[in-house]
Length: 303
Image (cartoon, rainbow, N blue to C red; front, side):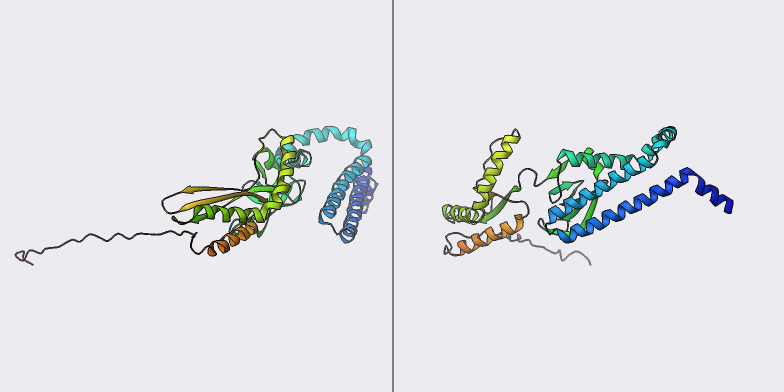
């Protein structure tokens, strides 16, 4: 047994493997210490995340260079073995390889960045981490109404970028169009109703609209797209029950629900001040009386 251990230690390959393992442990330890120091020293979330991520990628590169340096004199003899096993490994780990390729595409293709709101693979949420194999999302929606967090963290394989469309709510411009529908009773002053809704929307999102206009100008210089209007618009349609006013406006993609709440609160308050000139409509149902019918019994029929 003693001779076996002596022969094992004397083998240069074993010595290089041990050196590689020790070197990887030391590099990982140093990187973790640096990441902890940076986390305590930097208070901006974006800067802290970027530096920590950069250190992680740098450590991977350093480990590869270190291992190649140790086995540099053995690479020629190992090339054949690597070639034979490479095909089998590629087949067994094809999903992993595609995910790594997806990470490279995400890094240079500008699909999305950390903090963007996206929908990938049917999952909608905010990107909180982009790893080599998986993208981590803080999910929104599902059983929670509106664009609010539901508490679930979802990890999606990066390979999806080659298989499914990627919806980005914040790429190039940080706003989306949203709509608010107000049903108004027939007989109401529809001119006054339009004025109330327009003023409420403009008052709330007017300042943000100016920012959206400047952003949209840059967007149309980058892409072939029409010069769309980002000003608030109020339109009216009629159905069997009421007049339907639809307010369309731009809003920060993370503020849809709160903005709609503020606007609708102002609209309701102003409508109540009109002394019933304008009224919010509600569904009505007309119950039709059932027709009368008579039943005559034949007394001659035996029971």
